[in-house]
Structure formats: C-alpha cells, structure tokens
Image (cartoon, rainbow, N blue to C red):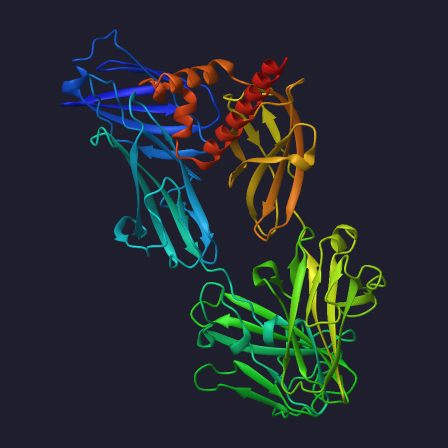
Length: 629
C-alpha cells in the first residue's frame, strides 16, 4: 500500500504519490487521491492538474488505470506533466527508464569505449489510440545543472523508445538523457523522464611491442626496440597520443631475480643505483646508462627505448616493464610487460595478436580469456621474412613457480596432434584457432600460452601470447517469485550479492520445458532485480525451467539454475484479444496484451510475442487434431 499527499496552493492541486505497483487504481477528487498498489518496483510520480478542471469532477467519479510493469524493477525519478481530460478521463503516459537509479549527483557510469542503451517502459493511462511520438534529448551537465543540449550524429537514433549510444560517441563528462513521449491523438498529453550518465576514461593498454605480444626472441647482438609510444592503445580514441604520458622503464632477469629495487622502491633501467640482490639486466651497464637510447625526446620524451646489441647476456630471458603516467593526472597510470629471450642468431621479430581484439582484454602480463570462447590468433613477421621454411604452433599450460622469483612455469600440452582439426586449427599457418573445448575440458588450468615458431634458413624466431582465464562472477544467488501464474503474471527475478573484479555487465534469463538445448532467451537486465512475463510451461505439467546467466564486463559468464515455476495460458485475455481482432473492435487498445505490445520495451514485447506465438501454435495444433479426428 502506498501513501499519497495533496497540497493545494492558489489555483493548482499537486498530488505526490509513491507507487510500488504493476497495478494502480486511483480515486480522485479535487483534494485527495488514494492509490492501491502491489509490487517490488518503486516509481515516484508528481501529478499536476488544474484546480479549475478538477473541481468539475464529481466526487463519485472513478478513474482506473493499469500500470504495466517494466522488465527491470528499478527506482526511477519520473516527472510527468498531466492534464486531465474530463471527456476521456485521460492522463499523460507514464515512463520508466531502465536503468533508472540515477541523479545529477549520482549518475550511472559508463566507460567511453562502451556501447550502452537506455530502455523505457511506457504505460498508457488513456483509452483509445496508443499511437505516440518519442524523442530523446541529450544535455551536457555541470555540477549544478544540465543546460546545454548537444546534437549527435545521424547514426544515433533519437526517435525510438530505446536510446542506443555507440562507443566513443560522448566525450568525458555527465549527461542528462531525457525521453519525451507524446500521444498523437492528444498532443497536450505528454510526459518526460530523465536519466543521468557519466562517461569516464577506459584506461590505456601499454604495449612495448607490436600487438601486445607477450614474448619475443632477439639475437644478443641485435638492437631491441621497445616503443610504447607507438604500440600502446587507447580504446577511447582512434589513435594513441604519446605526448600525454611520462615513461619509465624497468628490467629484470626473469625467473632468477626480481626487479632491482631499493627498500621496495623500483630502480629504473637507467638508474645507476645497485641492488646487490637483484642485478641489472645490462651487461655493459655504467653510471651513464650505456647501452640505452631513449627516443622522441622533443614531442614525447622517452616514449621509446632502444637497448643496443651486446647489452644483454646470451641465453637469458629478460622481462621489461614500462610504467606510464598521465601528464595531467598522475592518478591515471598504465603498466606493460614483455619477455625477451636472447639467442646467438639474428631472428626476425614475430608479433602475435588476437584476430578479434575485443576478445583479448589485456591484464598486465596476460590477456584475459573467457573459457566459453575460442582463441583466434594471427602473426606478423616484422622485417625480412623471405627465407621462411615453416611455422608451428605450440600450446603450454602454466602454473606459478614457487621456487623462483615471480615467474610462471610453462609445460607443453602434449595432445596437440591428437586434437588437430578438432580443438586446434591452423597449427602450421600464420593464423591459429583453439576452440573453447580446450578450456572447458581443462577447467583446472588458469594460465595458457600460445607459442608460434617461425623457422628460417639461418634462424628460428619464437614469440608467444599468454592468457589467464577470466573468472566468472561469484558469491551470488538468484530466485524467482511467485512460483506460479499465467503468461500475463509478473514474475520478479532477484539476483543479489554477485561480485566480479571486472564488474557485472548484465543478467540474462532463459527458459525451457524439457530440453535445455531448446532454451529461449526471455529477458536481459543490467540490474540484479527485474521483472518478466513467462511463456506457458509444459503442456502436461505446466512446469517451466529457468536459468540465469550472470556476465561480467569482460564477458565471463556464471550460470545459475533457479526454481522451476508453473505457468499456464491466460485464456481469458487471449480470447478477448482474438475476439477484438476478428470484430475489429475499437476497444482493442484496452486489452492488456495490446498495451504491453505498445509499451516500447523490447524485452516486454519479446516476451509477449514468444507467449502468443506459442499459444497460437498450440491452438492451431488442437484445431488440426479436432479436424482430423
């Protein structure tokens, strides 16, 4: 039950109501309002009516509206300017935005490299036509107000009930996104609702070599170029601006020593201070940093580093690290790594990268890997590669090496040949693919290395890309309430306490009757509490099985089976719809299913289409059986 208060000042009456309902009944007079509600979502509505008009309403006049609840149960601040039409007892439509828990002081946060959507649920409070016009406006905000409307490019559609913002569309800052809905037959009946979003920086990827390759091979007499100013990636921009950053380089002999430091403070590669426990990488090192050349000293100082040939020892593995700090904001930082193996030959540099870059999310020394996705890699040979004789890919499993200094022990995966063209494709080409079966059948392994070996006439070049399994969200649960109903019943899905270091992206609900391989997606939500309408269950038992997939921002998914529910068809509502369609009834817009289909919410519309198609197919089958029998 909700409470309401009415304040009359001068010539106007303002009614403030707290609605927690999918079904609302309003009794109205010039001075009072009573609202009966039931649900878990909360919507605050401010209604303003002309006192001159409301005084004409008979005290026994009864106004009833049905509020169609959204796919997501959320708390949205909705302000609607409503004018009462005595002849039609109409109010402006009610809008709920999803996600809706935001304010100017506490906006929803998105990274600039993210696509995001704001969906809506439109509730009609008027008989007759449900035709509307919808329009989104976007304003740039300061700390106090949102005054400056901005125009987006034509690819951003602002006349739909859902607003989709592609990545890199909005610059950093806070924005007010406002949806205005107007009834076409009554243009004076319009409503607006707003949500606030903050666009933040994603964070750069610091790459010392091309494509972010984890390990390369160089000759001990070859120069080694490390160039984060060129090879780093800013996902918020088309190109990386090297001038915005400061660069500091570090090096250690991998597997034997830690990075040189003094009482825990790292010593840069050009620092002459000696750490007696962790020696320098440079065999020809002296106080003036002999063997090092820093590049781009004018525009972006130290954005590249060349380690001259002869500076590194033969047959060693070195780990180089770059620490990058934003010049304007020192709290914005990035770190990149590369392993370098030195040999006596003069191998070519081979770069290894992901075919679909977004499926390989950098994570310090590794790339994040979702075990439910395949790995598709490609290579680039940098330099003179005309004498190439063969290419071979090797797969390694990794584990932390407790006997050495912060290193990983790699063990060759022995079944590569056995699973060739089953799990592995392109093992002798520059493009290589490993299917998700490799990871799903080895869930105990969290570290993987994919190594490519290029054999030339006079040298062998080895490079690799290292991966770490992205752990799915954990520590949460999901439940549904109620445990039974019809296809028009509103079910609430609650998934509290889920945690993931990358953050939770969304929740997706799937249903099936007897065969999980035939599961159907019913809803998705960015919020952990959302509402759905379900299709009918099994023909004999009415039982419907459900599973929720909880996805993190890097794409890893946790699967949660929740209690089955019993769902039957709403025969009364469906038959009413059929009758009104057959008779071309002018009151068809009063049918609850029609109103849901007109809500503008893609999840709600999808749910009703699934349920209706299922019911119509069932009716058709029964009619055929009756005709044949």
